[in-house]
Amino acid sequence: MKYYSTNQQAPIASLEEAVVKGLAADKGLFMPETIKALPQSFYDNIENLSFQEMAYQVADAFFGEDVPAETLKQIVYDTLNFDVPLVHVNDNIYSLELFHGPTLAFKDVGGRFMARLLGYFIRKEGKDKVNVLVATSGDTGSAVANGFLGVDGIHVYVLYPKGKVSEIQEKQFTTLGQNITALEIDGTFDDCQALVKSAFMDKELNEHLQLTSANSINVARFLPQAFYYFYAYAQLKKLGKADEAVICVPSGNFGNITAGLFAKRMGLPIKRFIAANNRNDIFFQYLQTGEYNPRPSVATIANAMDVGDPSNFARVLALYNNSHEAITAEITGTTYTDEQIRETVKSVYDKTGYLLDPHGACGYRALQEGLSAKENGVFLETAHPAKFLDTVESIVGEKVEIPLKLQEFMKGEKQSIDMSKEFADFKAYLLSL
Ligand SMILES: *Cc1c(COP(=O)(O)O)cnc(C)c1O
Image 1 (cartoon, rainbow, N blue to C red):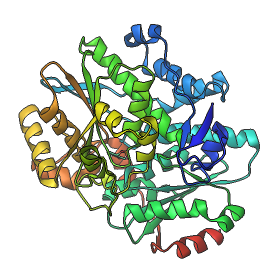
Image 2 (cartoon, helix red, strand yellow; image 1 turned 90 degrees about the vertical axis):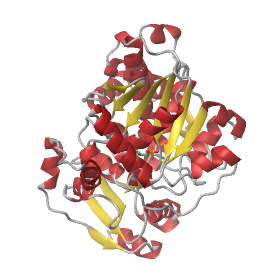
Image 3 (cartoon, rainbow, N blue to C red; image 1 turned 90 degrees about the horizontal axis):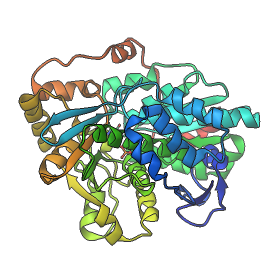
């Protein structure tokens, strides 16, 4: 499979180049030239496949030409060594719990897959050292850092906005040591993302170091997120609820939902998608007006969605040939204030006993407000509520139990390097390595 750049100004790349480079030379995002539909027999039988079996068939459609079957199968099976259950909340609303992996957020899927695939390419090429740069608003850093921890030949630099991630999130990537370094940036997530993008564009840096990106802009993180849309559908089908399936995705950088749109393009019978935003509702505004106006992000209690210029918007446009009409035919949007998010967490907990995290709450609410009686809705519960402990406890007025996996991280000691948001400082640091 070949990959083109959404900016159309860079040469076509192989999977290996796309994964190792992360971003195309023209700053565009890599897109597969074709998206293969899966055969009807796959869909007819989907509810009888295990998550891993199903995911391997999806992975084969994307990566089968470029990675030997046994290697790919191993990568898929290792990545998905945890379940992604579909849990009924109430009425026709279901939660796809993506928080059963090592860092308790959906980003474990892409982070783990990418670490393994990049590791494979590096071994194959006999490369000595690759540096992974990753900007995080909270959960990416932990998923990527834990995915890559201890992988030979790869060093990970996590850039995160000082004071803008929860303590638990921070502990998950600042306490690991080994091949993981945390850089605490005096700025916003957008500043972190801009630093990473600038680093890739800097000629001098790229001559000095082999750099790659682990943000959702990397196809090795982005595409595997399609796996669990198939699994959500299979679980709905098992329950006899797969007709008129609607999937709602709490969205920030739009990698997650775009992977779902790819799944639909591969033939997955999803009727429509909803992108749930917090107050950073650039995409929502685009849906209403047809105009894309990025703006600086504002801090909200659903902080992993605090993105003012979603990277993967370029992929959405490419997928629908820049047609606003085609996009709005398949995707609608919602936008919620912190107050509405709090209200939703509280009322759902009081009514049903189901504890939402602030991101999932946006997803739930969009379904509650927007589903017709005939539709069945799945929202992606993108992280465990305990990752946002203070927020969630203050909303429900009760102690929230912290899963053991998280308690382990809390015991570690934070280690990070303070840095300004100026590219010159970041560059000087990287050159000094
Ligand atoms: C990253 C993240 C999101 C946003 O996902 P995108 O792919 O950036 O749209 C939503 N919720 C949680 C908990 C996240 O960590």
